[in-house]
Length: 115
Image 1 (cartoon, rainbow, N blue to C red):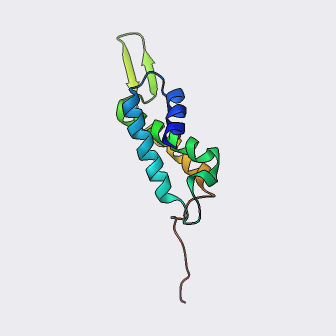
Image 2: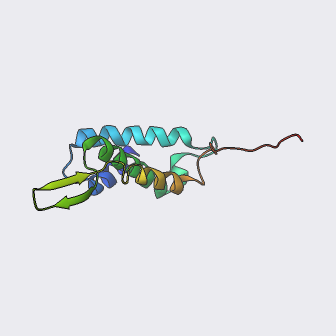
Image 3: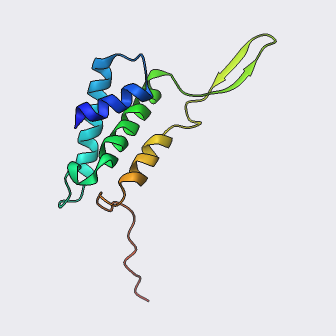
């Protein structure tokens, strides 16, 4: 599965070191695999698993590689502002939404209050 994820990430992040991408892809696959319900395998998710893992890997690469979005640019006295928090985690969030039907529920559960 890592090879399928790697191909997607290479399209999302062209020109990056392939060994780094492979490590990130393997880690993303492992992370997603650990979230799957017990009755679900990565192959059961169709292309969703590979795409979600690729989005995770690309998001991690962006967060650690300084490729966050430029949020402001000025020409007079040259000023460039880059904010890593502007879209940090956006792809990771989308990956989790994509995999929601297949992963264990890890959210908050309200069971009731005695009155």
